[in-house]
Image (tube, rainbow, N blue to C red; front, side, top):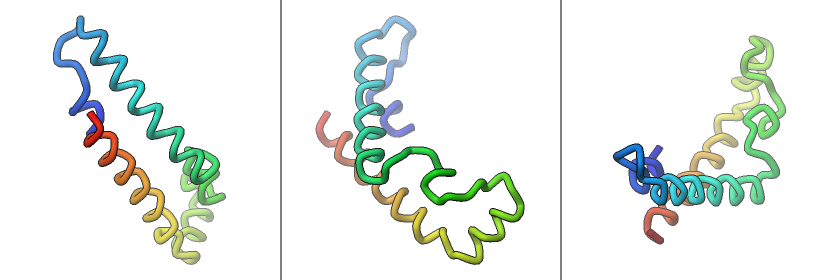
Amino acid sequence: MALGFYYGRTEAGEKEKREKTYAKVQEMLREFEEDFGTIQCKNLIQLNLLDPADRQKFQEMKLINRCSRFVAKSVESVRRLLIER
């Protein structure tokens, strides 16, 4: 959302801004996938959080700590992409 807000278009005809935003988002996703092997939550934590049993395992295994790494990496990537312009 931050990338879209910063680089995004404010009018429908701003094709260049739209393309730049898409490129920045794709760059962020590529970096994340290179670091973690996937961008899919289910694959990152090996659990399906729609399943109550898996949600319980998530709590028991304290996987919130692992997820914090994913969020921190994403924030760092977005921060860098915002600075680059």
